[in-house]
Length: 108
Image (cartoon, rainbow, N blue to C red; front, side, top):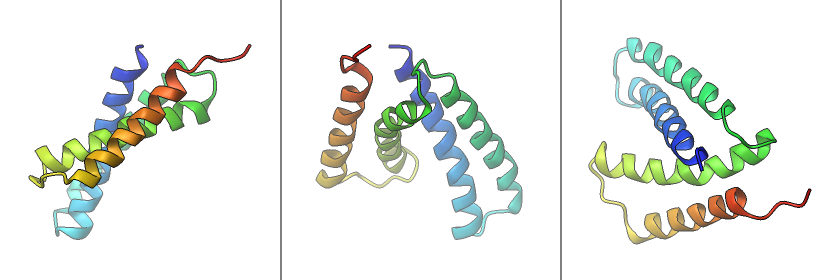
């Protein structure tokens, strides 16, 4: 169960890092934005490597749903764009997939 807070922190770091590049490239922000952006992306990779999953691919797949939820929250809370029903439905489907991957019974 410690994977969920870890994935949430990784998502925040990844979105922050990617947004820094977005701001520089698409919103004419200073190139200095790229320095904390790179640090955030490095933090993201490190956090995701701490997952208790026994395989990287499974950790990345499970993380994907949390990333989608975090991205929709970023859209709403940072960019002040209200998610529409398709955003919410898509995020719910991704979260369901995350739960299947994380909590599904594994054969030994």
